[in-house]
Length: 243
Image (cartoon, rainbow, N blue to C red; front, top):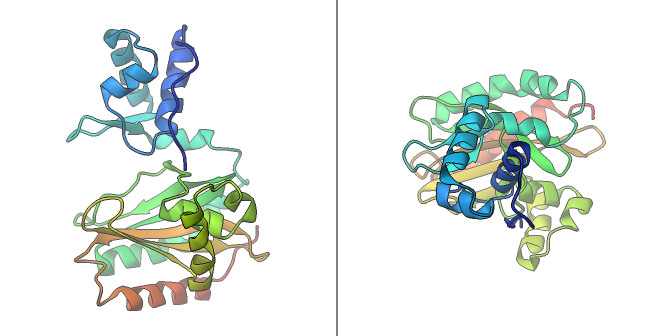
């Protein structure tokens, strides 16, 4: 599980402060308050922190939630995750976007497409209707091992699974492989459910994930099995990509 750590020393230059701020947000499991960020950076002046946050918001590296006032990584943070496989993101979007559009329209859910980048999954496409529940933005980095996307990574890659210390999480990995999907029932927030499906290449390696999220009114106990079966059928029909 990713945890946040306070920097060993207070960053001195503007670049150091900006990098420390981005690192704090990237390693935080939840959006951060202004006060929490200030403490993590060693108590720099509030005016300095405000200037840093404004600059990073303008560049797209940081997003501030208007309702809560909390800060999180923006879409442009995804470029720092690792070196991507050339052209793979475009191939993934080309192959899966029509299915994403149809699922979002028919079930009023948000649908995300993620590319594997190192030991993370980066959101490369999001499709939603006006009534869909809010999900992560394009560029969001997913590497929390207790979330659906991290569980998929660990379930399909032993090298990632070896980094998971929690035995309860490790016990879930074989079941996820056997089921062929991961289901999350309201752990992120109340009344919100998520489904995640692995995207494998021809060598059976995980190269991405297909995910969706919606309220308990869209992903219901009654339609869950039918929804899962339908998506798995469509993904099987599309087949694997080259690695």
